[in-house]
Image 1 (cartoon, one colour):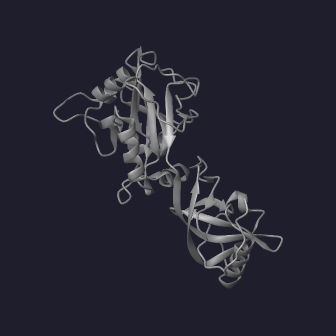
Image 2 (cartoon, one colour):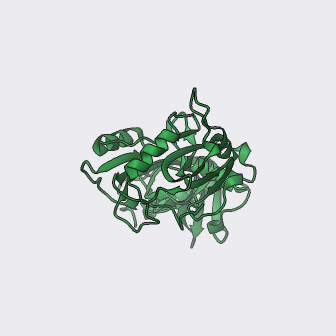
Image 3 (tube, one colour):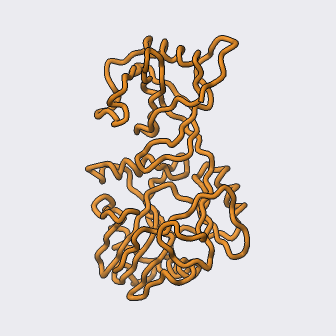
Length: 315
């Protein structure tokens, strides 16, 4: 079975393309996986073609045992190359949470973390037939025929005809975004195409501040935790007076130790006041990177009251 050098990647775009030649799907906030199924054996590969089979034994099990109701046909008996996304779905928020699938990626004991879903969206090979030259609409139809039922942990993502309606639903329910796909498009590796686009919503998170970095005797940034994981540092939006308030707060509520078993790599050379009384902070950013850090974070509102006549925020 011939794997692509890398999966086909949607290109970021601020607007949705329109027309009957386009289909639209939810953007699932997870980890890209290729699944090679061959006569009962399943191998999983990352976007960079690293073998991830041992990290996701539940997905392997789901693929090996998938059967539609009333059918004796088993997907595992054939040969298929599938493209999809591994996600962890939060039943309370009713959406995927990227930080939780990262916990699985980083865990040495994967079965002790939350079970992932495998959301399928493309079929690249069926038997000896290479389907990559076929139109996406046909590939999606053949994929849906293979997996006609949505099982709780394994299903094909829907393809919608109305992008604007899907985008409004995504904003209302705080999902990550929408992927637009040209229905006639063949499967092209990487971003060497103009056929798949992604539009993402503004990322707003409620994080926990567990520490304050100090440089030159002043508060430099705030250490963020989200969903129990280190998210990086935020300083954009702070003014001089707010930095002074943070320093005073850190000195008043200094903890004796760090909340991390292992200090994050980008904090190892930093002086940090760890907080015995962490506080919540609303931040925005472009995205959570594959390393689990918030890209270009910015504070939305300072959490403490400050005297009138404060300075404007620095950038």
